[in-house]
Length: 117
Image (cartoon, rainbow, N blue to C red; front, side, top):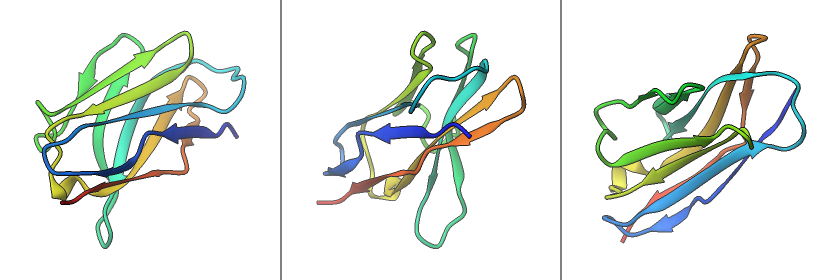
């Protein structure tokens, strides 16, 4: 099982920005069809934040559209999440996800994002 490694979380004030990064910890021998970010706040279910396909198509829920931007580096199998205009309700553990051509679901360990003054 491949492990995805996330970085870039932290504490930021409302209105601030953070950039999350995610990449596999080692070599992979599958093709990644799409990658994405999910988040889970205390007491809530995990929810989709953004996805991007191998062709570059993106998808966002209304709660983050216009504030968050997902991008990927296909050569590195890396995915990024630029988060702007952060709000306290964006506070959560953010998880990276990848889905491969072998129907594998890979997850990262999660990185904490806290938006507070």
